[in-house]
Amino acid sequence: MNRKSGSLLQSINDESGQTLIWSAFLFALMLGIGGLTVDLGHAYICSRELQASTDAAAMAAASQLPITTSNQTTNTVVSTGTQYGSQSGKYNAIANLNTPLAVTGATTTVTPGCVTVGGLAQCSSTLLANAVMVKQTVTIPTMFIRALAAVGINSAKSITLSATAFAQMRGAQRGPYDVAMLIDTTSSMQTSDGGSNCTGTKVQCAEQGAQILMSEFSPCLPGGACGTPAAGSGNVPNAVDELSLFTFPAQTAGSQLGNDESCPSKTLSEIPYPDSTAYGTVSHSNPRMPPVGTATGDITSTNLQTLVNQYQVVGLSSNYRASDSTTGTTPLTVASGGGTSSAPSIVDAVGGNSYFTGTTGTCNGMQAKGGEGTYYAGALFVGQEYLANNSRSNAANVMILLSDGDAGSSTTSFSGSLNNSGSSKGSYPSSTSMCQQAVDIATAAKAAGTKIYVVGYGVASGGCGTDSGLTACQALRQIASSDQNFFVDTSSVACAGATSVTMNGKTNSLSAIFTAIVGDLTLPRLLPNNLTTIGWTPAS
Image (cartoon, rainbow, N blue to C red; front, side):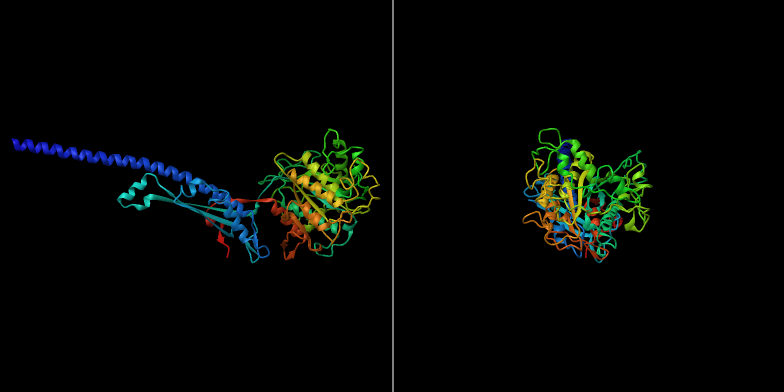
């Protein structure tokens, strides 16, 4: 009897011990599950931060592409991508991803390479990289599951995260943009190009550059036909990129559109530069870039419109192609009847499809009648003010100036009036310091957010005879938004800072330059991480 009682008591004590053991185990298990949730939540946050900065680094690196045999930018691509990484001291440095909060701080690897998607130029013997891969890794500590190290699981002390992003170069995605093209049609543009850009006259070659722009820009959203513009309008429904065309010298208001855009083109009626007479007796409070409005010292909106009418050939238009995917020998839409059609045609104004050897109809495009010297300060002023007053809120403003850069219209051509309208000598409008006036106006336009490209065509040494200590090369370079936006063709003298481009074996041809401008106005794009889908190969 006593033996049984003792045995029962021992049994009870034994079960009590098991309960304590199981309680302790379940408590540790619940603590472990809770700790795992906390640690995984922290890891998820860090992973999202790492991926976001990796995407940013890839986009930044892709903005420096492509890498070509004539433009070895590998170091720039790598350094730019690294600068936007998560490492300490970089633009996207994040506390969670660097010591002391991380066990091992973030590392960034940037690898240029090639992809086969996106409709971009494919890598070749001259195009070495059209895309980039960025990979980042970081090791973060655990807070609760590190306790498992006590039973020998040392890997529980930390978690290693990694993120990868691929991005392709500009050319994949665009705008929208509102673009003003300013084309020199002075007498120097009558001469033959000599074959460095095309076989026609210089003005015809310049117009072919405009054709290239319109063949690459997006007139409407992709996926179908652009639709029909409203009566008398040059814009299609859901327009994306709109272009306007200006010329200098100025022409008689009211006849310029019909004469330059009509098919066949008619005789032009050029006039002495009207800038000062349009202002009347207004005293400009800011003569470098006269404000437009109603306050004392402002140029009136009526006078501004007078200037626009005398410099502008066609207003902002998107009816230059029938669809976003139009290609072939006749990609541009030639209007029937030119200037007499229901909608002004910017395509007719630049000679139809002559660059593509396609249909041009009877459109000869803008002419270079001559008779007035070069004065592009006025065209820059009018182009900027036109964009400021007519561009869309969702579009970025762009001006493209094509000229030899030698502003030097004589006082006689200005009718002797440009220094008598309240402006000081050398301030716009004036017959002295003409290149500096253009630089000043461009500076104000860039400050207002307009991106300016400059195409120096037939630039000679010296130039800018009305300016002291300023050459044509220097003036054109200062007008451009950056050296990346400054080009000179193969017939020009070498200009310091100008970007060199090659296409179809020809260096600094107008076709290569205008193609480069289109490429620069596009944006890089992130790609999926499926290597097979994007056809990724690292650059050799």
